[in-house]
Length: 280
Image (cartoon, rainbow, N blue to C red; front, side, top):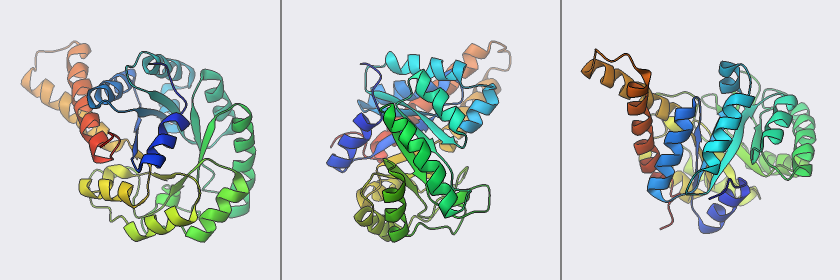
């Protein structure tokens, strides 16, 4: 199954009332695990590399190329996405590596600045045939639009999409990034109002903090692309700790990282069903 454009996963999900699972890659083992989990589920999946992950690796090229190659070898449709990029130069680099979409995050700017920057990036990406996700939010707080209490206004969201020409919109409906407990209260009525007002697919960031039944409810209410990162990191780290506790003599990282990779794969399979990425 060849690497696919993100639109080839998100578009059919929108039409079918399904979700599209998007999971963050930090190391190559994350990419391998996510694809293995998607293959077990028989579902398409989106591999995401964030600007923070790029910073960890020191550059996009190595982890980006590795992730693209993992996607190309998959037995289910897999897209590769640049997540939370704040610099146009990083977006251009992702286009050159074959990424199928980018999320350009200008949410820390005021509304006019956000529109101007995002419009320019969207124009460049569309010229290359690449799908663009953006974020509309309030200034302040490292979480931007996903700071606790922030909410997206449906009318403003519709105007923003029209002004920027983006293909998908990350919305604030009660989640926050990097939550390790599932205590986020998702506003399902707001999701429905946004779905009615906004003509492009809606994206949920901070999904790791959402109680699992509410992930399904959020998709039914109108969200499509569901981003999950921290939850997988918890599973990855727990598996390594457990393996080393059970096998204190182990020094070969392939053994304990393999345990983490397997744990993440199992979680991806389960989560894809929760977000309705598996056709009913």
